[in-house]
Length: 485
Image 1 (cartoon, rainbow, N blue to C red):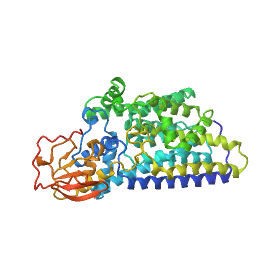
Image 2: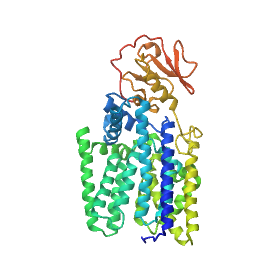
Image 3: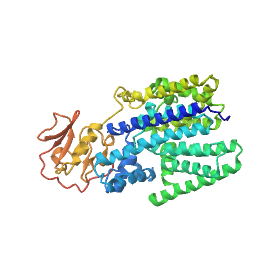
Image 4: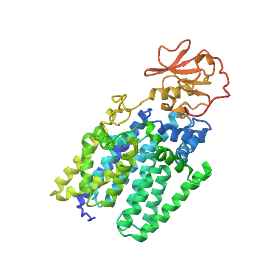
């Protein structure tokens, strides 16, 4: 890659644009963290929030992955740390600790935009062009949508991007290489699929004939692999247990396909739908960057293609690749700026890219599930925001009732609720197909208006109601199961 010589005015403008993009990106992310109680997919609750709630408060629903050991405990431990911190400072109500968790993930997304700038710079882009690339991640609607959600993709994306920025930089010091490889190892601990980036880093270093650096990276990554295995040994009783069970479920048995399958072109098709103009712009600039950033381009393509070949696809799986594409777009933008004459032309081109990203982010509130490729065959026109938010807010309301001794959610499958992370009461929480109202096992129900029966409505949210049944005290349920149905 060829270094770019920058004029002071361009460097200053790049710094200003980066600061504005990060500030606006943080504002967008924090806004949605505060205004969305919905669920994109159950994993954002039952792979993170719910096991973390169990660790900190002693109760919560258990998904099959944490019964059979198909996930390690790194992500729940991270979220449990946030819940524990919240508990120390008095945030013991869902309205407090959930905002803390969502806000943390929102700020991780903002930090990832800064890391995108670092990666673009490490790949040869000027300050000005790299700022345009960072804005394409900081402000684009799809990254904004996923940002506040407690998912492994969001937890691992910052160490992926910053790790590659440090390890792939030309002339990276030994310390930078060790730190970068360690961040990639941490990313694998948080999400197994990030192992593609570890293999990719070694491949790039070997292709550049940086034999010694490749050896150092291999040693560091081997240490993190050992940590992964040890964590499983300590928690599940077998070395690499979660990786073995997960890979067997998804690759050997192919059971992930039971959640739905999509065609090979799913990811580019959905990105074009969710961000029509911006995705084309990012793709075009990333292609322009190809001759100057072969290593990063190959690594990104490998990650995307491996996911494209898997039958079961969800747009969230591609979250770790989005900042890499944005960083490549920054390099491509730098190539474009080199052929433009004069500061005004280069400044205008970069501001136009940032404006396009800002326009995408400003329209994020209009995203539907069809735009995101989720539930696109059953309810594609439904808003992607606050889905089941009314249920979750009523779960919170139920948890605050002094007389609640059991709760049944009659309106939706339990997996699409916030569970005890929102209910926050050590009392039975029954699914829609659970015991009938006359069983005496629960005192409250979340139901549709008009279905109160002999009960009394104590709270409403949108189309739903929290109803107190004529039950003085709940009948004990010794057979109550904490397993998520």
